[in-house]
Length: 156
Image 1 (tube, rainbow, N blue to C red):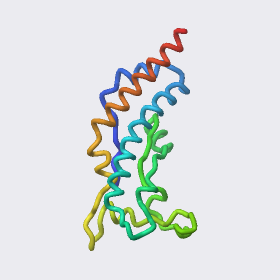
Image 2 (image 1 turned 120 degrees about the vertical axis):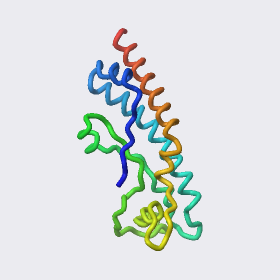
Image 3 (image 1 turned 45 degrees about the vertical axis):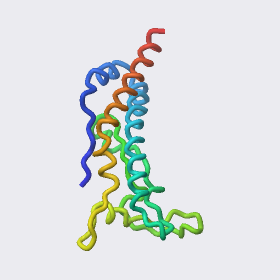
Image 4 (image 1 turned 180 degrees about the vertical axis):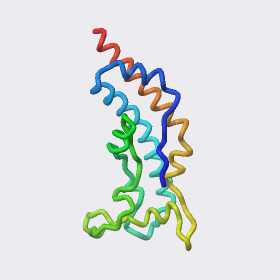
């Protein structure tokens, strides 16, 4: 259902990063990818704030998070991050928001994709689609910076 975002055009930086040890690869690459994920998360939060119902205690935007996707990362031989809603689409038993517990937000998927009776009001998909260039630039800049720092340490 969701399509992974693939960063392209940073082949030189990735080749340079592969010259270093695996721990340093993950630190530099992880920090770079997280910078891009933060841009998407912030955009998704702003989009969700615009559509959240003020009359309810449940706020979708409070449950938007960045998560490492280790399974996808291992499968593709790298790192992967997800921006999504805490709990996914599972309906779980949770307490009330008035008692300081996270309300059940399984319905976010109905808002994002719509149903047979309601139209979709996407907030996650546009967060990436509208910011692809910003994300790519942020990841590339941070990755090049990380490679430079790692290279300097190797020389010293």
